[in-house]
Image (cartoon, rainbow, N blue to C red; front, side, top):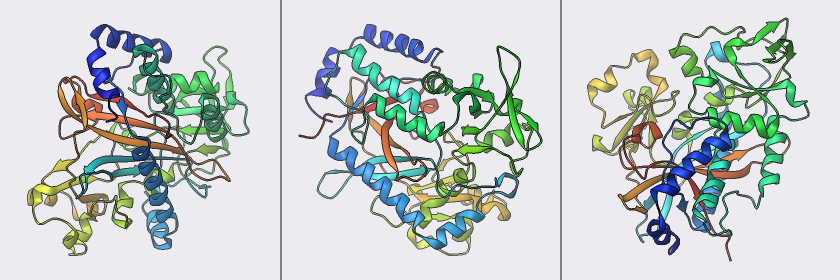
Length: 407
């Protein structure tokens, strides 16, 4: 991808520089990065990045312009987690693509999934710049999208996350954040925006208000806005009891209203009709014979997924009748069968060709349109792309998408 940048990087790579990269990431994020960081960034043609950016906007517009989908997705929010005062649209979109070759041999993006949930905006900006700094790469390389520079990037994030509030009254809420592998990202948000990262289970409810306890003074600080990083699946798996009910009518704003996590997710895939979207059908529909003809006859070309999990948990390839039958009938609507895509391994590394999965991160400020902000890349050589699934390999893991401005 983009020669001679790729070959030149491989030729000049040293383990000493990679060690320096890891050390710098720890310094810049003020913590220890626990997941695997790839030895290399990815160099993409700007036209390919633009194709993914444009597809993400088209896919999102298709969903929000579909009255039936909007009704169906509203009912997809579990009653126990149905939060009042839903915003007109999500504040964040994260849309993942793999790369396939078309009949002409050209690389084309194919949708993996889309999620109306924030991703690692803070960490990703630091990682992208660290690659350029530590390896002494071409200073013309870019990673911010929409012609943003660093100041514009953080200004948009501040507008979306903090809004009109004093940062001390805005919190990044997560389940036991100090134990999360995304802690480096939280640290960058804290530093850049002046907000506090808090454990959602340690919030304090008084009347219709939520508070957090200041770690220095011990005083209760009112919360006006929550930058929501809580995954409901984790709350349920860990049996966490919250100090409030999601259904409470609280006097708080959400930067990333929790309902959108359910409304725009793998649940969206069967509702999309776009060249980038592989065939998908809900498990209950498949049992009822609805949409089954969309899938390939060969089950080795199927992927079986729970709708509301994260980090690839529960995904099965080439599912058997026993796998599908193990899901109780009343739970089948929460599972998805999808056509499996054979993504191309186009990143040439000293360890061999490696497959990238590219996530385009967008913000959607109140009263404005979606803005593409940055790309995130996960590199892998196994069945699964998540960094947890590639921890024992090299030249895989968390990476960045760099590109030269179009001429």
